Every structure is written in structure tokens, then in C-alpha cells.
Length: 477
Ligand SMILES: *Cc1c(COP(=O)(O)O)cnc(C)c1O
Image (cartoon, rainbow, N blue to C red; front, side, top):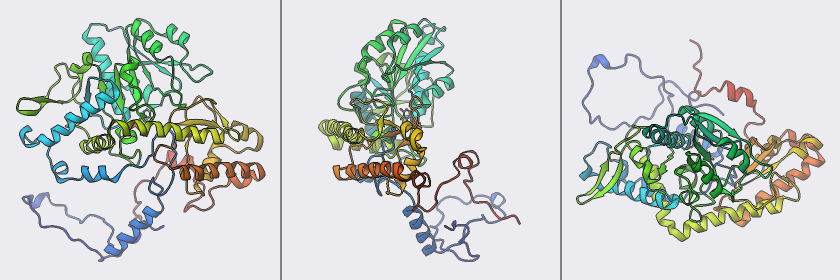
């Protein structure tokens, strides 16, 4: 496919710029050479981007069972609401009384997401999940420091954790202690007891964890950490199995982040914008970053937390993502939120059950919103790997599951169908998985060379990761 720059023909163009409505800058500040932009007609542009869109897989094209990413269908209604001019045209420095509607959105969002997580206060400053983790860890740090408890330098992180957990803890200045999971994929209580002590700042945990299992010992886990004087951080990036069912705050957690760009109506991936709000219990609220919203006698107003850790982002975060999330929660209502979680768990278990006679499950028990299979047997028998199965799915018009994650399962494929897939579309996915398995046994070389029908076939993954070319390379003059 030709790049837009390669389609450029000197002198062709279609600029329809509005009249300038701001003061002109001094001529000395103007650029001397025109920018090197592609010169194309409107028709060229339209065809180019339509071709690109057709070559891109999204939830609007087909199933996207990318585990730990919750690529579900997001109702267009929420985008329409976020596009209202009252939301898009507001300036973050506008006086409070001129932006009451927007402050109300943030206030309601604070309430709704505190209710869903069992927290008391929330900030919408963080722009992504990892950013929310970093923020939450700074709250934990500020809390210990405010009490003069400066020996707490360690954060306990299970080996099944998302890679961002140890990374965020390191960024926040902590030392990471790796907790090995038991053979059942859950936290090993004895190892946790041995690791928790006077140097423990806290624990970071995902529940359900990254192998899709809910840890039934959760109350004991958080108690052990609290008894040692540490705090408990809940990685709530994937709330799709528990929203409306169980709350991190009731499980003993003190801090949580959410990925609005997974569970709450903004797609995950594609470069954003996202939102990773961080919530906390009341005793941590004075440390929150930026400003939160309060309701006063004269309406909504900004509140500056007294011992704030400072800002983690400009202004109030990615506000329009919060508008979409609030619209999503309010339009579903409590019953709808519960039904979404239940549907996500049902769909995952339907697939898991139907596949489990053919593919090997990493942990063969009831899962939450996702499950993990291992291609180790196929790799040993016919040299077909998780990567090969993922590539073969592309020929069926299906986005591959997450591969080679979590790290505790070898040859992992992590499948998250989400609640927005119908039984018919789950059956199509099943058909693809089962047929690929048959083909792999009958003619492994055929599967190893997949995909056969996509625009580009097998890519050089190493070069793509190590030396990506992400902008147009101008021919040397
Ligand atoms: C996606 C995810 C994150 C990180 O979220 P980003 O927005 O990508 O930074 C953290 N933890 C878990 C369990 C996740 O699935």
C-alpha cells in the first residue's frame, strides 16, 4: 500500500482553511520554507484512509479476544455524549461557576466509581493504568512518610502480576519483592507471611489475577499485609468480572486504580486517550494529586487535598474519557453493570469448557472474565506454538488472544471474549480454534506459515520491535 506521502503530486491540494480568528504573529516568527506535507486531492485522502481502515482490525470488524485488555463493544451513545460542545469546548482554567456541568460530571464520576470500588475518594488525573498505579503507590509512600515510618521500602508483587506493577513500584522509588504463586496460580499464603514485615510498604494485587482466577483467600491476604503495617493496592485495570459483584474496598484494599479504557467504554490500545483514575480510602484522601470536586452551597467547586503529592498530569486528566465512562455506568444502571460482569464470566467459561478437551488449560477450573491455555503439548508434539495459533486466527478474521502472558504460563494464549460477543460469534471463535487445532495436527507446516490471507504475511517481529520505522523516510536529496 502506498503511503500518503508517496501519493503526493506537486501542486495538487484541497485546503479549505477557515479564516484566521486570532492575532497574526510577527512576520519574523513565520517559517521560511513551507512544511513538507503530502499534496493530494480530497478524493485521494478519502480513499487512502478508507483503505487503511479496511486493513485495520477493530471491535467493529470482528471478535477481539485479547486477554487482559477487554476489547469489548463500546456503545456509540457514550461517544455522542462526550462530543457535546459543552464538554469539548470547555477550558480547564474557566471559573468554576461557568463550568458547573463539567464539575458535576467529575463529582458524579467520583461517586459512581467510589461506589463500584468501595473507595471513599478518587482522582481522574492519571491518563492510563500504569499512571494510576504510579499515583496510588505515591499515596502509599506519602502515607508512610507522613507517619515518620521511613523504613517501609518494599512492595510485594506476585509473579503473575501485570508487568506494569513492578515497573510502577520501581518508578515510585520502592524495591520490588517478587512473590511466587502456588501451583494453583494463587498467592502462596506462607510465602506472603514470610515476606511481609516492618520493611513492607504494601502489596500490589490483581483479583481476579492475570490467569483469570479469583483468589478466595483475599481477606486473609490483605489481613496479613495490614498486620505487618503495609497497605494493599488493587490493580483494577480489569474490572469486567467483578464490577457490581464484589468491591476491592470490601476485600481489604486501601488503594485502587481503574482502566476506564478497558472496562468503561473507551477502547484499549491504539495510543489513547485513556484514563486510569486512582481511588483510595478516606485516610489517604488528603494525599491525592491535583484537585477533586466537592459539592458546596453555591454548587460544585474544586477542592485542593491538604497534603497532596502534587500533580501527576496537567489539569484534570482526560476529561472526555470520564464523560464516556459516566455515561456508560448511568445508562447501564446497577443491574446492567452486574449483568455485564456476569455475561463476561459466562462467555469466558463457555469457551473454556468447549475448548478444554482439545487445548490444554493452564488451570482447569471455573475462571472469571478470561482464561489461559498453554500450547506446550502442541509445541512438543508437532512444533506448533502459541504464536502460530495466534497468526492462524488472523485468516479467520479474528484478532489473536494475548500471547506469552502471563509469564508464569509457558506458550500462553490468554482469551477474554467479553460480554458483548453473542453466542453466535463465540461459536465462530470456537470453530476457528478447533479447526486450527485439527489442521495443526494434520499439517503443522501449513499452520506455521500462517497467516495466508492478510495484507502482510509473517512480519519480522524482532526488527519491528527493535527498529520500528514509524514516520515517513524522505528520499535523500
Ligand atoms: C492493562 C493493564 C494495566 C496497565 O494499563 P495501561 O493503561 O496499559 O497502562 C495494568 N494492570 C493490568 C492487570 C492490566 O491488564
